[in-house]
Image (tube, rainbow, N blue to C red; front, side, top):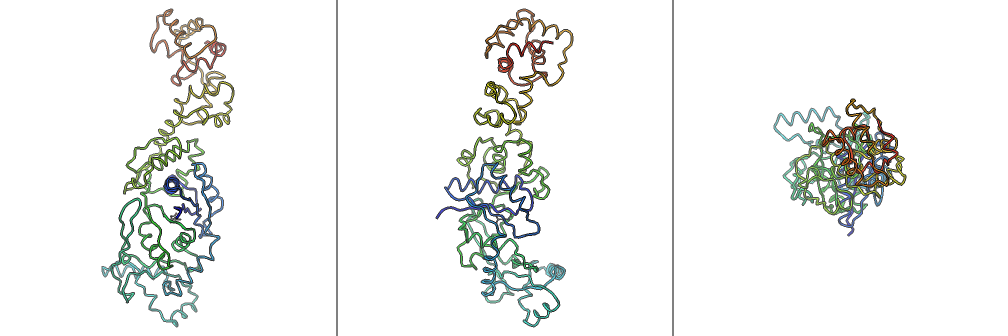
Length: 457
Ligand code: GLU
């Protein structure tokens, strides 16, 4: 059977780096297993789901290097959910409830006072047809709960019912169905919560592995029961740890903080984001992996740790720098061209500066410095100015190459007696306008003799 996974975001906001971790775990797993990766939009919440968010999620995945084999939308599959709900109703496994939120809360408090677990007591199961008719006549609309298989003959006397699965991330997992309330599958307004549609889709789409955050572990217990109630074999499950902000707070789709879109707009490399989102919170070292094929090669889904991983955005920049430092010209070429860096010097320029930039866009400022001169006023004191003037008089004739700098500064040293910082710092300042940057031996041939002389103070 083809391994089939799905990434199932609700398009109610921009996905963040934590959501991308789920997508990556699924995608990398599929890639390793030669499987299929489905992008499924959990958009049953018509009011909050937006097409623009769905489109952005697809664009975010593409930017990170993930192209789904299929895109599905729950909003187009309501027929299948209604059919499944009917089957459950006929089997007596989906029952109508009429409690208001206040009533439920009051009952919950009473159960807590009596030291009973605060789960739903299935009171609605006792309603007679005439009581239900009475509620309907009052204008109450039922919500529908799934009767969990956590009892022998009497649903009011639940018993410990363990659901086990061998989690592909966490190993053996157990959920006791008696510790759960019968989940509401359909709201009073007739809309579906996520629980049933997800199971129906996983069955219909042939999903073999459900890989998602560990906030779904309890849910998995109930969903396994639902798969079985619908006569299907449950898929394998894997629950990875979640990412939190440095404060320990969970990341939220609603705030837009650390959204993939904003990281992309910030000029970060997609592989810096993908590497960190995948490797953080695992027993692997967090390194900048240059492409998805290599990330998949080293990926081991079982190595993610059990506790939440703190995510520090500063790490993204460290990885970004590392990726750029190693990036071959052919990979940078198109993006440099988009920054207006495309003449014959582009390759040499890239190799000279790639180790000194934080983000690709920083190349533009160095290009300006190389082609037009310092972008900031060069401030030299009188002594240094005279020194630089004298040094410029010693510039060798062209052709210039990587050894010109050494040849020139050797002469300057012999003539002026200056060495070390006193020799190099004023020259760097005069040539680039800034106190640090790429190797001058690499920059000098790019400036050329004429370009260099134009910087004479
Ligand atoms: N829409 C659900 C979520 O984002 C999907 C969970 C799942 O993968 O089943 O949490």
